[in-house]
Image 1: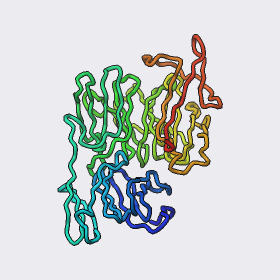
Image 2 (image 1 turned 90 degrees about the vertical axis):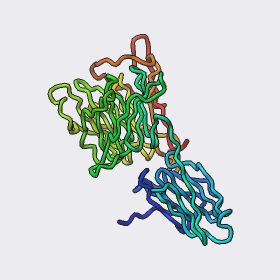
Image 3 (image 1 turned 135 degrees about the vertical axis):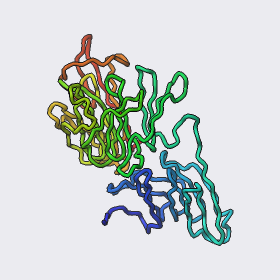
Image 4 (image 1 turned 120 degrees about the vertical axis):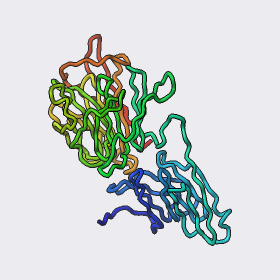
Length: 382
Protein backbone atom coordinates (compact mmCIF):
# COMPACT_ATOMS: atom_id res chain seq x y z
CA UNK A 1 0.00 0.00 0.00
CA UNK A 2 1.45 3.38 -0.98
CA UNK A 3 0.29 6.63 0.59
CA UNK A 4 1.74 9.84 -0.86
CA UNK A 5 1.53 13.27 0.75
CA UNK A 6 3.21 12.67 4.13
CA UNK A 7 6.05 15.10 3.50
CA UNK A 8 8.85 16.84 5.40
CA UNK A 9 10.77 19.88 4.17
CA UNK A 10 13.95 17.81 3.85
CA UNK A 11 14.99 14.20 4.20
CA UNK A 12 13.16 11.93 6.62
CA UNK A 13 15.40 10.47 9.34
CA UNK A 14 13.04 8.03 11.08
CA UNK A 15 9.41 7.05 11.60
CA UNK A 16 7.54 4.75 14.00
CA UNK A 17 3.96 3.49 14.32
CA UNK A 18 2.49 4.18 17.78
CA UNK A 19 -0.13 1.51 18.41
CA UNK A 20 -1.44 2.99 21.67
CA UNK A 21 -2.61 6.21 20.02
CA UNK A 22 -2.94 4.91 16.44
CA UNK A 23 -0.63 7.61 15.07
CA UNK A 24 2.47 7.62 12.88
CA UNK A 25 5.41 9.70 14.19
CA UNK A 26 8.14 10.92 11.84
CA UNK A 27 11.18 13.17 12.07
CA UNK A 28 13.64 14.78 9.70
CA UNK A 29 15.85 17.81 9.30
CA UNK A 30 13.35 19.95 11.21
CA UNK A 31 13.54 20.33 14.97
CA UNK A 32 10.03 18.99 15.55
CA UNK A 33 8.25 15.64 15.28
CA UNK A 34 5.23 15.22 13.02
CA UNK A 35 2.31 13.09 14.23
CA UNK A 36 0.15 11.73 11.41
CA UNK A 37 -3.32 10.21 11.54
CA UNK A 38 -3.54 8.00 8.47
CA UNK A 39 -4.86 8.76 5.85
CA UNK A 40 -4.96 12.51 6.67
CA UNK A 41 -2.00 14.08 4.87
CA UNK A 42 -1.34 16.95 7.25
CA UNK A 43 0.14 16.47 10.75
CA UNK A 44 -2.44 16.37 13.53
CA UNK A 45 0.24 17.29 16.10
CA UNK A 46 3.72 18.80 16.00
CA UNK A 47 5.93 17.99 18.98
CA UNK A 48 8.31 20.89 19.50
CA UNK A 49 11.15 20.93 22.03
CA UNK A 50 14.36 19.88 20.35
CA UNK A 51 17.05 22.47 19.57
CA UNK A 52 18.60 20.35 16.80
CA UNK A 53 17.41 18.07 14.00
CA UNK A 54 15.60 14.99 15.31
CA UNK A 55 17.54 11.86 14.40
CA UNK A 56 15.69 8.86 15.84
CA UNK A 57 12.32 7.86 17.34
CA UNK A 58 11.34 5.00 19.60
CA UNK A 59 7.86 4.06 20.82
CA UNK A 60 7.58 3.22 24.52
CA UNK A 61 3.96 2.37 25.36
CA UNK A 62 2.19 5.64 26.19
CA UNK A 63 5.42 7.52 25.63
CA UNK A 64 7.65 8.44 22.71
CA UNK A 65 11.44 8.75 22.98
CA UNK A 66 13.28 11.01 20.53
CA UNK A 67 16.97 11.68 19.95
CA UNK A 68 18.43 14.70 18.17
CA UNK A 69 21.82 15.30 16.57
CA UNK A 70 23.11 17.11 19.68
CA UNK A 71 22.64 13.87 21.69
CA UNK A 72 19.69 15.21 23.69
CA UNK A 73 16.89 12.71 24.41
CA UNK A 74 13.33 13.89 25.03
CA UNK A 75 10.56 11.70 26.45
CA UNK A 76 7.04 12.63 25.35
CA UNK A 77 3.71 11.80 27.01
CA UNK A 78 1.46 10.76 24.12
CA UNK A 79 -1.67 11.42 26.19
CA UNK A 80 -0.78 15.10 26.54
CA UNK A 81 1.46 15.38 23.44
CA UNK A 82 4.01 17.16 25.64
CA UNK A 83 7.61 16.65 26.69
CA UNK A 84 7.91 15.33 30.25
CA UNK A 85 11.65 14.63 30.58
CA UNK A 86 14.95 15.76 29.07
CA UNK A 87 18.03 13.54 29.18
CA UNK A 88 21.45 14.90 28.28
CA UNK A 89 22.92 11.79 26.69
CA UNK A 90 25.99 13.68 25.50
CA UNK A 91 27.27 13.50 29.09
CA UNK A 92 27.32 9.69 28.82
CA UNK A 93 28.26 9.38 25.14
CA UNK A 94 30.70 12.30 24.95
CA UNK A 95 33.14 11.02 22.35
CA UNK A 96 31.08 9.00 19.89
CA UNK A 97 27.70 9.45 18.16
CA UNK A 98 24.70 7.49 19.40
CA UNK A 99 23.92 4.72 16.95
CA UNK A 100 20.48 3.72 18.15
CA UNK A 101 17.90 3.97 20.94
CA UNK A 102 15.75 0.92 21.73
CA UNK A 103 12.94 0.22 24.22
CA UNK A 104 12.60 -2.91 26.38
CA UNK A 105 8.91 -3.25 27.19
CA UNK A 106 9.35 -6.08 29.69
CA UNK A 107 11.89 -4.22 31.82
CA UNK A 108 10.32 -0.80 31.15
CA UNK A 109 13.59 0.84 30.20
CA UNK A 110 15.29 2.07 27.05
CA UNK A 111 18.91 1.93 25.99
CA UNK A 112 21.10 4.34 24.04
CA UNK A 113 23.82 2.59 22.05
CA UNK A 114 27.23 3.95 21.07
CA UNK A 115 30.69 2.52 21.85
CA UNK A 116 29.06 1.77 25.19
CA UNK A 117 25.44 1.13 26.18
CA UNK A 118 23.54 3.30 28.67
CA UNK A 119 20.29 2.12 30.31
CA UNK A 120 17.57 4.60 31.19
CA UNK A 121 14.77 3.44 33.52
CA UNK A 122 11.19 4.64 33.07
CA UNK A 123 8.97 4.50 36.13
CA UNK A 124 5.21 4.75 36.15
CA UNK A 125 3.35 6.91 38.62
CA UNK A 126 0.62 5.03 40.47
CA UNK A 127 -2.48 6.64 41.99
CA UNK A 128 -4.22 4.78 44.88
CA UNK A 129 -7.56 3.32 43.71
CA UNK A 130 -7.05 5.11 40.41
CA UNK A 131 -6.58 4.18 36.79
CA UNK A 132 -3.38 2.45 35.73
CA UNK A 133 -3.64 3.82 32.17
CA UNK A 134 -4.47 7.25 30.80
CA UNK A 135 -8.04 8.46 31.40
CA UNK A 136 -9.79 9.01 28.07
CA UNK A 137 -13.25 10.26 29.08
CA UNK A 138 -15.52 10.88 32.05
CA UNK A 139 -19.11 11.87 32.81
CA UNK A 140 -20.75 13.32 35.92
CA UNK A 141 -24.05 11.92 37.20
CA UNK A 142 -25.71 14.77 39.08
CA UNK A 143 -28.61 12.61 40.24
CA UNK A 144 -26.39 10.23 42.24
CA UNK A 145 -23.46 12.67 42.68
CA UNK A 146 -20.94 10.26 41.20
CA UNK A 147 -18.27 10.51 38.51
CA UNK A 148 -17.73 7.73 35.97
CA UNK A 149 -14.37 7.53 34.18
CA UNK A 150 -12.77 5.22 31.60
CA UNK A 151 -9.22 4.68 30.37
CA UNK A 152 -7.09 3.32 27.54
CA UNK A 153 -7.10 -0.19 29.07
CA UNK A 154 -10.93 -0.30 28.84
CA UNK A 155 -11.36 -0.04 32.61
CA UNK A 156 -14.39 1.81 34.02
CA UNK A 157 -14.43 3.29 37.52
CA UNK A 158 -17.33 4.80 39.44
CA UNK A 159 -16.26 7.46 41.97
CA UNK A 160 -18.03 8.67 45.10
CA UNK A 161 -17.09 12.34 45.08
CA UNK A 162 -18.09 12.85 48.71
CA UNK A 163 -15.78 10.04 49.88
CA UNK A 164 -13.14 10.73 47.23
CA UNK A 165 -12.69 7.08 46.26
CA UNK A 166 -13.75 4.55 43.63
CA UNK A 167 -16.77 2.50 44.73
CA UNK A 168 -17.02 0.24 41.66
CA UNK A 169 -14.59 -0.96 39.03
CA UNK A 170 -15.11 -3.24 36.05
CA UNK A 171 -12.45 -4.03 33.46
CA UNK A 172 -12.39 -5.25 29.86
CA UNK A 173 -15.47 -3.26 28.92
CA UNK A 174 -14.51 -3.39 25.23
CA UNK A 175 -12.36 -6.16 23.77
CA UNK A 176 -11.28 -7.16 20.27
CA UNK A 177 -11.94 -10.53 18.65
CA UNK A 178 -8.51 -11.67 19.83
CA UNK A 179 -9.36 -10.76 23.43
CA UNK A 180 -7.24 -7.61 23.66
CA UNK A 181 -8.72 -4.63 25.47
CA UNK A 182 -9.77 -1.65 23.35
CA UNK A 183 -9.53 1.99 24.42
CA UNK A 184 -12.83 3.57 25.48
CA UNK A 185 -13.07 6.83 23.54
CA UNK A 186 -16.53 8.21 24.43
CA UNK A 187 -19.21 7.90 27.10
CA UNK A 188 -22.53 9.42 28.09
CA UNK A 189 -25.57 8.75 30.29
CA UNK A 190 -29.12 8.10 29.16
CA UNK A 191 -31.96 10.46 30.14
CA UNK A 192 -32.75 8.44 33.29
CA UNK A 193 -29.16 8.85 34.54
CA UNK A 194 -29.19 5.11 35.32
CA UNK A 195 -27.45 3.64 32.25
CA UNK A 196 -24.03 4.30 30.80
CA UNK A 197 -23.29 4.37 27.06
CA UNK A 198 -19.68 3.77 25.97
CA UNK A 199 -17.97 3.87 22.57
CA UNK A 200 -14.54 2.46 21.77
CA UNK A 201 -11.65 2.91 19.36
CA UNK A 202 -12.73 -0.10 17.26
CA UNK A 203 -16.26 1.22 16.61
CA UNK A 204 -18.04 -0.87 19.24
CA UNK A 205 -20.83 0.73 21.31
CA UNK A 206 -22.32 -0.73 24.51
CA UNK A 207 -24.91 0.14 27.15
CA UNK A 208 -24.18 -0.63 30.82
CA UNK A 209 -25.75 -0.78 34.24
CA UNK A 210 -22.95 1.18 35.89
CA UNK A 211 -24.16 0.17 39.37
CA UNK A 212 -23.36 -3.50 38.71
CA UNK A 213 -21.01 -3.45 35.71
CA UNK A 214 -23.41 -5.59 33.65
CA UNK A 215 -23.59 -5.01 29.89
CA UNK A 216 -27.23 -4.49 28.91
CA UNK A 217 -26.94 -3.99 25.15
CA UNK A 218 -24.40 -4.18 22.35
CA UNK A 219 -25.05 -1.69 19.56
CA UNK A 220 -23.75 -3.08 16.26
CA UNK A 221 -23.43 -1.58 12.80
CA UNK A 222 -21.34 1.51 13.54
CA UNK A 223 -18.53 0.31 11.31
CA UNK A 224 -14.77 0.60 11.70
CA UNK A 225 -13.03 3.59 13.23
CA UNK A 226 -13.15 5.31 16.57
CA UNK A 227 -16.37 6.40 18.25
CA UNK A 228 -15.76 10.02 19.27
CA UNK A 229 -19.14 10.90 20.84
CA UNK A 230 -22.28 9.17 22.11
CA UNK A 231 -25.54 10.51 23.48
CA UNK A 232 -29.16 9.60 24.22
CA UNK A 233 -32.06 11.57 22.79
CA UNK A 234 -35.84 11.40 22.40
CA UNK A 235 -37.51 11.75 19.02
CA UNK A 236 -41.24 11.13 19.05
CA UNK A 237 -42.28 8.45 19.71
CA UNK A 238 -39.02 6.63 20.62
CA UNK A 239 -35.80 7.05 22.54
CA UNK A 240 -32.56 6.61 20.60
CA UNK A 241 -28.92 5.87 21.35
CA UNK A 242 -26.73 8.00 19.07
CA UNK A 243 -23.05 7.63 18.16
CA UNK A 244 -20.67 9.33 15.74
CA UNK A 245 -16.96 9.27 14.93
CA UNK A 246 -14.42 8.38 12.29
CA UNK A 247 -17.05 6.68 10.10
CA UNK A 248 -18.30 10.22 9.23
CA UNK A 249 -21.88 9.23 10.07
CA UNK A 250 -24.37 9.84 12.87
CA UNK A 251 -25.82 6.42 13.72
CA UNK A 252 -29.12 5.85 15.60
CA UNK A 253 -30.26 2.77 17.54
CA UNK A 254 -33.83 2.55 18.80
CA UNK A 255 -33.95 2.24 22.58
CA UNK A 256 -37.20 0.29 22.64
CA UNK A 257 -39.02 -0.56 25.87
CA UNK A 258 -41.07 -3.37 24.34
CA UNK A 259 -40.12 -7.02 24.03
CA UNK A 260 -37.02 -6.15 22.06
CA UNK A 261 -35.49 -4.48 25.11
CA UNK A 262 -34.30 -7.87 26.31
CA UNK A 263 -32.26 -8.41 23.14
CA UNK A 264 -28.62 -7.51 23.80
CA UNK A 265 -27.56 -7.20 20.14
CA UNK A 266 -29.18 -4.14 18.53
CA UNK A 267 -28.84 -3.11 14.88
CA UNK A 268 -29.06 0.54 13.72
CA UNK A 269 -32.42 2.00 12.80
CA UNK A 270 -30.96 4.69 10.52
CA UNK A 271 -28.03 7.07 10.08
CA UNK A 272 -27.28 10.58 8.82
CA UNK A 273 -24.45 11.47 6.44
CA UNK A 274 -23.04 14.81 5.34
CA UNK A 275 -19.48 15.25 6.60
CA UNK A 276 -16.48 14.88 4.29
CA UNK A 277 -13.97 14.25 7.12
CA UNK A 278 -13.94 12.37 10.44
CA UNK A 279 -16.45 13.65 13.00
CA UNK A 280 -14.67 14.57 16.23
CA UNK A 281 -17.47 15.84 18.48
CA UNK A 282 -21.24 16.12 18.91
CA UNK A 283 -23.62 18.25 20.98
CA UNK A 284 -27.30 17.68 21.66
CA UNK A 285 -29.91 20.00 23.15
CA UNK A 286 -32.31 17.53 24.76
CA UNK A 287 -34.98 20.19 25.21
CA UNK A 288 -35.25 21.00 21.48
CA UNK A 289 -33.82 17.75 20.02
CA UNK A 290 -31.23 19.80 18.18
CA UNK A 291 -28.14 17.81 17.14
CA UNK A 292 -24.87 19.40 15.99
CA UNK A 293 -21.59 17.74 14.92
CA UNK A 294 -18.07 19.05 14.25
CA UNK A 295 -15.46 17.48 11.98
CA UNK A 296 -11.72 17.43 11.35
CA UNK A 297 -11.94 19.90 8.45
CA UNK A 298 -13.75 22.52 10.58
CA UNK A 299 -17.18 21.70 9.17
CA UNK A 300 -20.04 22.21 11.68
CA UNK A 301 -23.42 20.73 10.76
CA UNK A 302 -26.79 21.38 12.38
CA UNK A 303 -28.96 18.36 11.61
CA UNK A 304 -32.67 18.06 10.97
CA UNK A 305 -33.26 14.89 12.97
CA UNK A 306 -36.78 14.49 11.55
CA UNK A 307 -35.65 14.27 7.92
CA UNK A 308 -32.12 12.98 8.62
CA UNK A 309 -30.62 15.69 6.43
CA UNK A 310 -28.36 18.70 6.90
CA UNK A 311 -30.31 21.71 8.17
CA UNK A 312 -27.53 24.31 8.39
CA UNK A 313 -23.75 24.48 8.03
CA UNK A 314 -21.88 26.88 10.29
CA UNK A 315 -18.77 28.48 8.77
CA UNK A 316 -15.86 29.05 11.14
CA UNK A 317 -14.58 32.63 10.68
CA UNK A 318 -11.29 32.69 8.74
CA UNK A 319 -11.30 28.94 8.08
CA UNK A 320 -10.13 29.28 4.49
CA UNK A 321 -6.87 30.90 5.63
CA UNK A 322 -6.22 28.33 8.37
CA UNK A 323 -3.70 25.53 8.05
CA UNK A 324 -5.09 21.99 8.02
CA UNK A 325 -4.00 21.23 11.60
CA UNK A 326 -5.81 24.35 12.88
CA UNK A 327 -9.22 23.50 11.41
CA UNK A 328 -10.45 20.52 13.48
CA UNK A 329 -13.46 21.09 15.77
CA UNK A 330 -12.34 18.93 18.69
CA UNK A 331 -15.12 19.61 21.22
CA UNK A 332 -18.41 21.44 21.52
CA UNK A 333 -21.28 22.01 23.91
CA UNK A 334 -24.66 23.76 23.86
CA UNK A 335 -25.77 26.17 26.59
CA UNK A 336 -29.42 27.10 26.99
CA UNK A 337 -29.24 30.49 28.66
CA UNK A 338 -32.98 30.69 29.27
CA UNK A 339 -33.49 27.66 31.54
CA UNK A 340 -32.06 26.60 34.94
CA UNK A 341 -28.82 24.61 35.14
CA UNK A 342 -30.72 21.38 35.59
CA UNK A 343 -34.27 20.43 34.73
CA UNK A 344 -35.48 16.87 35.27
CA UNK A 345 -35.89 15.34 31.79
CA UNK A 346 -39.45 14.92 30.63
CA UNK A 347 -40.77 13.21 27.56
CA UNK A 348 -42.44 15.34 24.98
CA UNK A 349 -43.07 15.39 21.29
CA UNK A 350 -40.29 16.76 19.13
CA UNK A 351 -40.68 20.50 18.63
CA UNK A 352 -39.63 22.55 15.65
CA UNK A 353 -35.89 23.14 15.56
CA UNK A 354 -34.94 26.74 16.33
CA UNK A 355 -33.34 28.68 13.51
CA UNK A 356 -29.73 29.81 13.75
CA UNK A 357 -29.02 33.48 13.17
CA UNK A 358 -25.89 34.89 11.50
CA UNK A 359 -23.89 34.60 14.76
CA UNK A 360 -24.53 30.87 15.15
CA UNK A 361 -27.02 31.50 17.98
CA UNK A 362 -30.29 29.60 18.16
CA UNK A 363 -33.34 31.33 19.55
CA UNK A 364 -36.68 29.85 20.58
CA UNK A 365 -39.75 31.16 22.33
CA UNK A 366 -40.47 29.92 25.82
CA UNK A 367 -42.97 30.94 28.43
CA UNK A 368 -41.92 34.28 29.87
CA UNK A 369 -39.73 35.38 26.95
CA UNK A 370 -37.16 34.34 24.40
CA UNK A 371 -34.49 31.77 25.20
CA UNK A 372 -31.03 31.86 23.65
CA UNK A 373 -29.08 28.66 22.96
CA UNK A 374 -25.34 29.13 22.52
CA UNK A 375 -23.01 26.70 20.73
CA UNK A 376 -19.47 26.75 22.14
CA UNK A 377 -16.69 25.08 20.17
CA UNK A 378 -12.97 24.45 20.73
CA UNK A 379 -10.52 23.39 18.06
CA UNK A 380 -7.02 23.14 16.71
CA UNK A 381 -6.67 26.92 16.33
CA UNK A 382 -6.42 27.27 20.11
